[in-house]
Image (cartoon, rainbow, N blue to C red; front, side):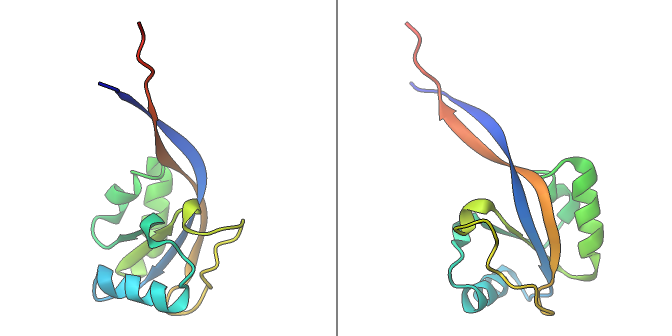
Length: 116
């Protein structure tokens, strides 16, 4: 049986905030306004933002982002694989303002080699 080793790779994560009735409404907005995004690499956070953000950011950064996003009920994280190129194509618009580009991490699993 092959095991795996998890590596957390550093990356820049785009964070937006907005008010949505639920995750489906947030994803519908993204589909309508930025159809080029690969939604498999987008996270919509509605509850316990500071806790959920710790999966991607250090504790201090997670609290800072959660505090900045406190005026809205939804945070949207756009991970680098969600788009091609260097710049996220989702515009900074009033219904979904961009909170910034934050240094975070994404997990990467590497198959362990079987040792004889």
